[in-house]
Image (tube, rainbow, N blue to C red; front, side, top):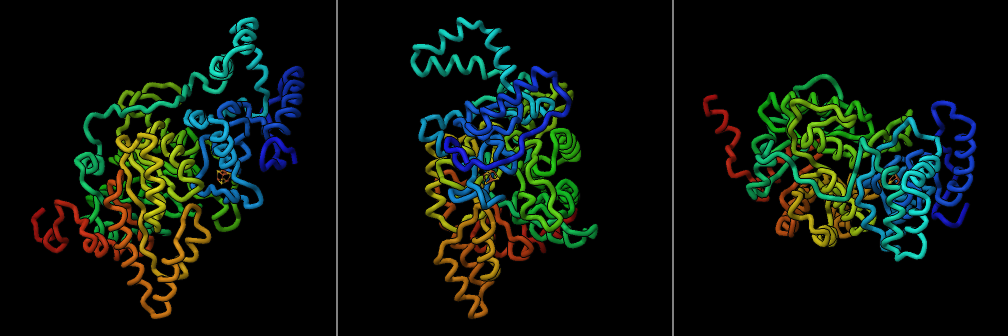
Length: 494
Ligand code: SF4
């Protein structure tokens, strides 16, 4: 195991799809033999080592190209516990080198025509284009800033092809008016509640519609998950369409795990045409969590940040990724997941910052059980000066019993339940009172987080326990301003 890059282990390189001329194959072989041991290069053909502290991110089993997934920890990768999280290492090294702001640049998905081929041919071409003398002058005897600029002159266009042109800037949405009720309420300063309804595992929709109608009066919008734990269920867009039919506003979740760039763009155009206005972009749970037989774990055509970038440009610039104009562009309010307890708060805050730059207008966080820990993460977000650019909804889940608490704490990536709460659940379980204790804990957490800086609402995830949602929202004092009791609503003529 080479010493230069932490956590190095053997992984097969990408292979080119077609046979390259001999000269290029030779160059690729030389590049692989040098960059492999030094940087962990997997020959993705789309090199971005300058922006990732010279550690190849393609060692990530999920193929994340824009930062760690929500399961990243200091100890190990959650997909493959035998290795460290390579993105954690990239962040660690970038911070120690003072290069962390480079991590904000939104990097493109792979150009699969280039995978397995060399990048050095492109570099040589670029040097010729700029002029060898000029490059040499820019790199030799110059202050660090100038040297970086000279490097970037060479590598920038290679890293950021014309069809992508990612940057590190914030881009304001083109929509002047809110495009959804959720966005309208958040912009109006309302402390909103969203909730989640589990999509059915069969084609029967009676229970789904009952749950939608049960929750609808209490929340601003209802999320529909996209095959969580990499286990198939009814699709999020089908559930979202049904919610619209029932008069509720959906948040359609889309997991990058199951999408190609073509599938993603086709799906949002269709969903927007059907009336979906809130879209939540996620990487998606790894196949590691799926029942057997497992699908491929190491290929994701696009990650969640690239999804945001693509969808933002479709809406704001009216363009597909391939540059085609969209005459009637889709309109949506774009969201992303945030993970206050994955890796280190300052690492996560940087990742959330990048999501905001890519297009995230709201965050729904992973489950929060530690209000003090949340505060640390919020402070890191505040330091990045993005609190006025994104709405944050804190993920709260009432725990039904001690076994579930133990399972979530031990196995769900990015979830941390403090010991004192675990003990409370254990004691309540022994007294046969676990459900009530879970509700009380949820109410206490809501009370603790609602006054914190930057918190704009709650995302209540009562997975499979939807009937508890009205009670929690009522007792927490979070009924919407226009709330009409369901019985009274039925009495009102349509
Ligand atoms: S924890 Fe996530 S980001 Fe880190 S290496 Fe594993 S899959 Fe990749």
